[in-house]
Amino acid sequence: MRWALCVGLALAALDPAAAWAESCRAPEAVCAARAAVFPVESHDPLASATRIGPDLLVTNRHVVADRDGATLLLPDGGRLEAEVVASAYPGDLALLRAAGLPSGPQLSPAPAARLADPALRLYVLGVDTRRRTVRAHAPGQVILAPAQGHALARLHHSASARPGTSGGALVDQTGALYGIVTSGGEGRNEAVPAAALAILLAGQSGPKAAQRMAELGRAYRACERALDRSDLAVLAKTCRATGNRQFLELAGQALGRAGELADSAALLERAVALDPHALNSRLSLAITYVLMTRPDDAAPHLAWLIEVLPADLQILNLALQTGVRAEQQDLAVAALAGIERYHPQSADPARRFFETAFGAPE
Image 1 (tube, one colour):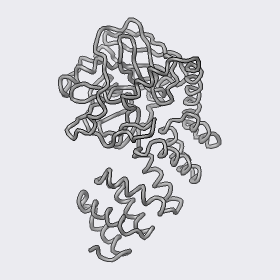
Image 2 (cartoon, one colour; image 1 turned 60 degrees about the vertical axis):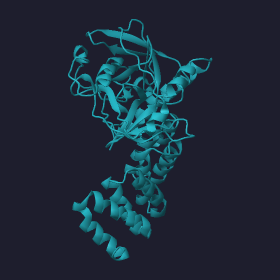
Image 3 (cartoon, rainbow, N blue to C red; image 1 turned 180 degrees about the vertical axis):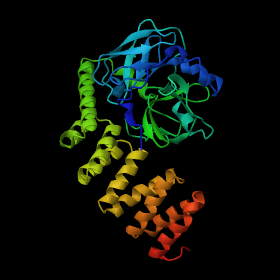
Image 4 (cartoon, rainbow, N blue to C red; image 1 turned 180 degrees about the horizontal axis):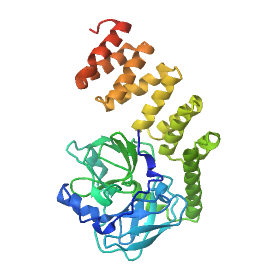
């Protein structure tokens, strides 16, 4: 359902000399901006880092976890060591400093107001682990801008993002930076908004920056370990300590698969509270409520998801079933209408299911 956080995805050795030499079918400015993205090895064996200054780059905190350094792979085949710069920023970003970076572009944040432009096309620039190159992935659009009033809310988009692109750049047709790629799945992908870079940079000051960074790094590692080992005894506690909505989502999903539905719901409710626009967290919470035979609680989340993703068949089917079980005809009607419009091949069984509960729709 998601490539989530790209943990443990070391594949074949990267050929950095080919990183920026491959053909690029994106707009010229997007192709040129690839030179601002570097393959990086750290806690995560292979990810991406985006250059934002002469000697500064940014990647995801989950890429470095509690390590104090990272290795950048250069386009000439060389390797360059970078230090992790202490910052008290609480989200999934980490700052790297590397002396001796080759000359090249540095990406700058675009005005957030441009996210409302329906013509905006977004591209993920990051490592392609299969092709072993830094490339511009297939473009997409904004699904939802960051939720207002939620400090760690993310930018949700449909641009293609795959393992290895964590820490890469989300840019528009002009190469302007909109976010740092972090996670996602099934076309519902996420980036930390570029506006968070200012908070990350400001977080370097103060005596508690290094302490806070170390605490978060240890929490990230502990949560990943619990997820990898399916250690249900400590999963909720360790992943809560990260403050990372995606980790809460992953932990909630793991607990749900293990049948610990109440604990699953609690973590997923916290994830949605941190970022109300988190599509996969909302969907996971709705599924958990259905499994708990709480269709009335699932229904509002599914109604919201239909508004945002009206053609998603998984959401439509779940909403139809939930509408029938909760006796919420309006939800079932909306789901059936979406199936008939976008998935006519599935319309006949859906209509029969609806009519069994409510009779023929008007």
